[in-house]
Amino acid sequence: MPASNTPNSARPEPGRPGGGRGQARQFRVQIADRQNLLDAGRRALAQAARQTLAAEQVRAAEISIVLVDDHCIHDLNRRYLGHDYATDVLSFLLDEEPEAAARRAPGSQEPHPRGAGASLSGEVIISTETAVRCAGEYGWNPRDELRLYLVHGLLHLCGYDDLTARERKLMRRREAEILGIWNLVPHYSTQTP
Image (cartoon, rainbow, N blue to C red; front, side, top):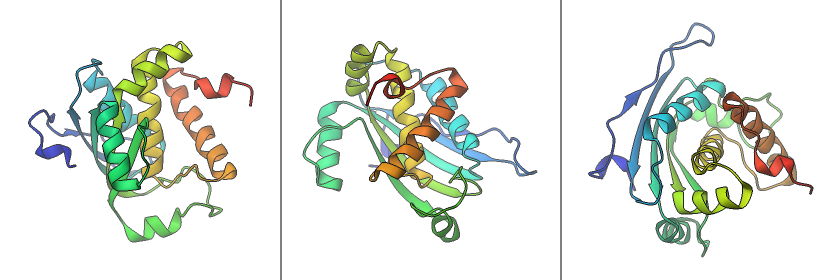
């Protein structure tokens, strides 16, 4: 579901060159908005994607962000992952340098950030309907919930996973660190287990 083929796609926004061992970072972010429930703040969302990639020390990335409703994400989740339910976010890694993938395999002992030095291309599909519903449950602004889903999806593209307790703990710690950029504390970190 390439975002670039939709009439509502935004033009790619190049990332700003910045820090990190003398390398200029190139981040291209496209946003396709296929829902009408939430004004997602596309410019701020694209900037949050670039900030997340920079925090992960990704060297270069082409990212498509697609905003959808629960019905659409349910269909995609069933079609591509075999899960028959709506979810908050789906991530699809479309391309990355082979040596980066080997270096950042889940369970390896490398220091984080796992995105360090990577060049990747991927798509993050987010349900704004889920974001609005969950934001109400947790007392968050829906755009902050959307940002949490974006960070989570981008971390998946960088090699983080949440299938085991150890990996989930690492991923949630990294999410909390990145959300701290915007002075956000994830609602799951304030809940008792």
